[in-house]
Length: 218
Picture 1 (cartoon, rainbow, N blue to C red):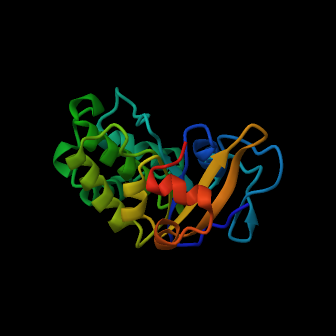
Picture 2 (picture 1 turned 90 degrees about the vertical axis):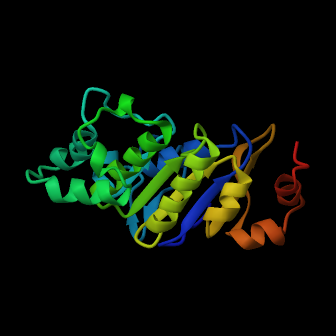
């Protein structure tokens, strides 16, 4: 069990296989928990369909439509919601991620960093309450990673953001709160410790957390 504070930038941290992406997918509605419940504020969304949740996901593998332009990739979710005049919302999203000059290109004509910014623009276009990000910088070079992190800093003033990352430095730089997940022979995806990121990294209350953040883990 854990609580993600509203309006926070929350990092899911831990070794491969501990359940970070599964947790993210359950929040998104792409996986259904076998036990317990998921609530958004006071609303139980455990069995709510993904498209009915005010939650959007930035996937690790981009999941863009290669046959559509950048503009139409962003417009897709808006059109599915029955919005006919999408120009203003798409153009605002493009401006935020600094891609308006590339609106008529296809995703394959973009760099990895530009594709990830396109994914973020698509996620924010429908104005969700929560944005989920699964390893958003794992395939990017350091310069593109820094650009995405700067963009995430801008977003966290308006959205609750939950990010899955293996990168402890990224979690320390970007997030307000962090949960450290782990696994053992008997159970996977259990919470070792969670709280403010500065406390997790500077004053961990669990020796396993301390070993992980210091690089001694495993």
